[in-house]
Figure: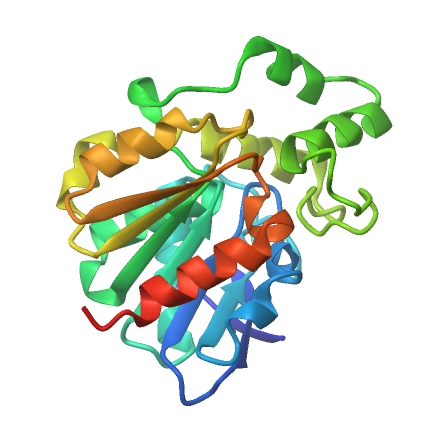
Amino acid sequence: MSEFTTTDGARLGYRVEGNQDGPALLLLQGQANSQRWWDGVRSDFEDRFRTITFDYRGTGATSAPEADWTTRSFAADAAAVLHEAGHSHAHVYGTSMGGRIAQWLAVDRPELVDRLVLGCTTPGGAHAVERDQQVRRSLMNPDPAQRRRALFELMYTDAWTGTPEQSTVLGDPSMTPGATRLHLRVSARHDAWDHLSEIQSRTLILHGHADRFAPVVNADLLEERIPHATKHVLPGARHAYFDEFRDIASPLVVDFLTDSR
């Protein structure tokens, strides 16, 4: 783990691993999660790419005062991490809230983003299709154990043999309650709709067909709105398609990023 201080005094923790001679691949995780989100699949990319991850403000090894964070400000942090890691550009793969952050990075800093992968994410704002009320209620359960079980079931299908304790995508336990609330607001206030048509990067959109956390219709909206986008929907997959269906999803990403066309 490496660290550096941003211009506003935050201390960001980041990791660079994989093929040091390969192209850079920035991985952006979901809401209220540290870079451990990628622990289960990072090795799928390390033969071909130099993988870069970092802890968002409020998570993991990053230290920053709690403030009015946004997906756009987190995208600025992502740009700072790339610069600190010595890269003038990179492929970017963002999932869930990480996909929202990746949208702003591609809009605000197009010179930094080679190819873009947006997984299980939405455009935000009035045009996004949100999770239904039953899902919302399950995630607001006052019992932490039941709330975690509900989140686990939204992430994985019944066929997955893992347990909540084995998953690295159910939230960063080190977060303060304040940081957790701020992350919820960061994701909920995202709205890049009016700017998606500005994305210049060739884009792959991945989504699980059975995703109730971020309904799959959002993949259609992103594909229609982003100029150079293609879409692949994984039958039966839920929100953590990238983990449970890694044998399908990771090769799709690698093939897209290495396609010379």
